[in-house]
Amino acid sequence: MISERFQQLCRSQLDQFSDRNDLLGLGVYVAVPLAEADDLQLRPVAAWPIAADPLAPADPQDHEPLLLDGRQRRWLPLRREAVIIGALRVDTRTLPWSVELRRRLEAAAAVLSEARVLDLEQQRLQRQLDHEQDQRRVLVHQMRNPLAALRTFTQLLLRRLEPGDERRTLVEQLLQEELQLDRYLEVLAGPRSVRGLPAAGDTPLLLPPALLPLQPEPLADRLEPLLQRAAATAALQGRGWNAPERLPPWEGPAAAVAEILANLLENAFRYSAAAGPVGLWCQPSTDGLTLAVWDGGPPIAADERDSIFDPGVRGARGVGLSGTGLGLALARDQAQACGGRLDLLVPASALDPALPATGNAFVLQLPLSSSAAAPARPATG
Image (cartoon, rainbow, N blue to C red; front, top):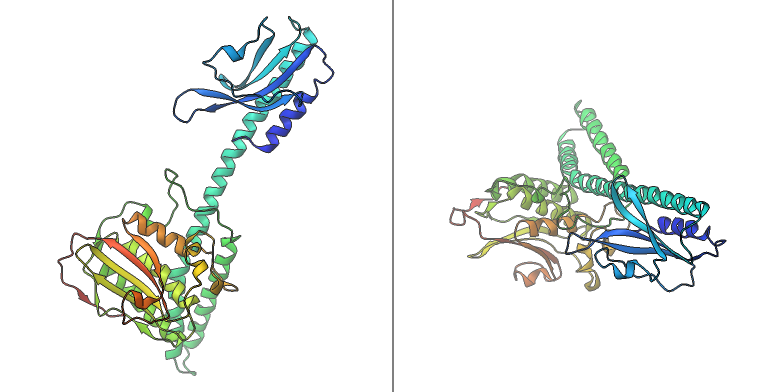
């Protein structure tokens, strides 16, 4: 990549030679690796005079375009120690160069070399900073789920204490500390604009765990506390909660699947209609397992059903509410890492006639597990 700042510097360095009538033209090139080979290509960056014909890329293996008839073209290397990182092309009317011209050209090549080194280093540091910011945003987002669970259980505990109970003060203080932690997370989250998740081959982010090696484990063990949390949240919000009668006998990257469902449930409780029901639906099959987090609220707008899965994008129902817009993007990314997929189905009754006819269902499809024949476990949430 060639930054605009480096291009501007190149143009300013070449413009200083406008007083030289013995020069036909100058050109700055940078060395760029070829996509499908180990060779380098000299890619043009700037030329003088500006009215000259556009520079074409130069292949160091093809000597013809590197020289002119009469040997009036010379190349000064741009170096990073012993490594060639570019070249300054000089077309002249006469040879040899005067001592004064040679010194000026060599000084320009040295400035361009140092500038290119600094430009490459700045780009490397910017990529590192962007990656660390992505890690921070994802980590902050994932910390919200356990913090929300602590706040929910604290509020339930506070409800069970009588007004004169001396323990109420301690529980109220605990709740205040949890709210303060939530405010700290909002500050750490920083700007809500998110460029995206890491591309294939990039270093994995700290979270989600689906991007890291995981040992298979029963999904039911991970779902138990999640169902309890959902039931407690529904009780606090005064809405209906519908848990599956039995937990699915599925085994695999259960921590990642539970994290997907936690994000989906968090969204359902936060963004769906205040009094509408929320539930978790599951259905094992010969091909795998299908899970769905559904709500009974108004359907998500048709023009948002694809974009809400993009990092940093939030639907109309999230306007004015806290959040990063990362939950669905992470959930879909995790689902793919588990070998499955995550889709939005509207209305929820399209999945099962027993579900609301006006609601939304986020459907997670997982591949067949090694323990599909195991007996299902009754749900307790």
